[in-house]
Length: 636
Image: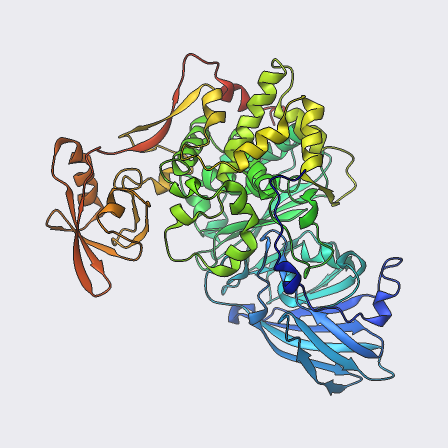
């Protein structure tokens, strides 16, 4: 029984209006592959942020419905960037045809194909946005291009995506190199012809290209499947990768094999973009990933932590999220709505796997790993009062609405966001300890991983699952009330941090005046979050206020700006000094705030000094984390 599950009653009204089948394709869709869509993307003007698209679609006479991809895999939401499509023209036999947009679904276009017509010719431009709008935002600079094919294709309604074939061609700027998981047919100068591929596989195979390009082999000794990292950057210098990072990434491949005992791809490519002019994120794909970081990250002292944390997470998704995917997220096309209530597995488990693999591979230290856990736990305890009304399950179920509804402008700690990542990771750590304890140390969560994510390598296939099937797999490893375990935690509204896995592993969350010395959290270490309850930038602009915290109680709110501290002009250092001295003073910290066009004073009644989260060893319990983090693969 899916106690944790939820359905979205509004989804039926949101379904794509692609109900008008394409006669030449729909009739045999269940039995045979449809004729190929010819697709040509001219990206020669990518530095100008213009991609020109031409398509040739086999059709039969009658009403044709064409869909622009709406629900984007990896983003889990209806955010296909249709607003960037421009200049759409449809023709048949050289004559233009009128098209209309569906009134119930802006992602669907209708056109009448006259008698005697066997194909439609489409032409349009995709205009790359210049902003940082995440995975569907700006993806082109003067020197590089990140191409997600869902941006540049219209496809016919009716057949499932696996039954629609695409024959892609691409033109790049002169002298640019590229990388993708798509198999190539031929290449001549700047023109590339790819082998025909099903639409679902096609849209799961992004491409990166650029003037400054580097490819590095990451295949461990004895590994039969090829792995590499392909990098594009805005400068040649940014392509430099230290021997330490390269070794860590090669170890990452080896450790994944030891952890899962199986692979489900023909080969794997880490696609890495280094630019300060694209958004920074990672999106998973079955045989590659689309990861983007600042231009000079490989040149920084923390390169292994930054690159390792992101790439390990996206790589683990090839098993968790791509090969094994929640049944209601394995949709037949890109218009059918997804149900995202199992993202605590899809993303939460991957967060656990990514941090674990980053540490076992040497990209992170054990201290980095513990600091990450401490930061997660602190942010989900005193840093997340929203847990008292909104369980983590709902943060997963609501993803489609929240991706399209914006961030609301602050109060994230009370509204909650994508906490299924970090809270999910902490819960999977607790599940690991349950298996260890219930089996008397004979079994581990890795037995579950090999069972659930193992099997023969048939290339990039999908094996969907339900909550009940997930619980069945747990019980095959060790008998336990797994449904009760997960439901109690997924529905919890406790104000306490979900730190059961940390405490059971021989550690405990503590707060001290010492800032984190490393790990993912160190660059964002703030002495205001767990003290006066503020998150603010160097210029004093408040991005968030802990709901119910000291600054909240004196009237501070997101969007305001701290102008002064105890009668002095604000700087981060002056505020930090005031917090440090608060334990020796009975007087509140006086903040001068700018609220729109007004000044207001805010006496913050706080006297606890600096507080940063850390894990502290509990000597009364065995150190389970030390065993968990040991490398499993032979040294390369």
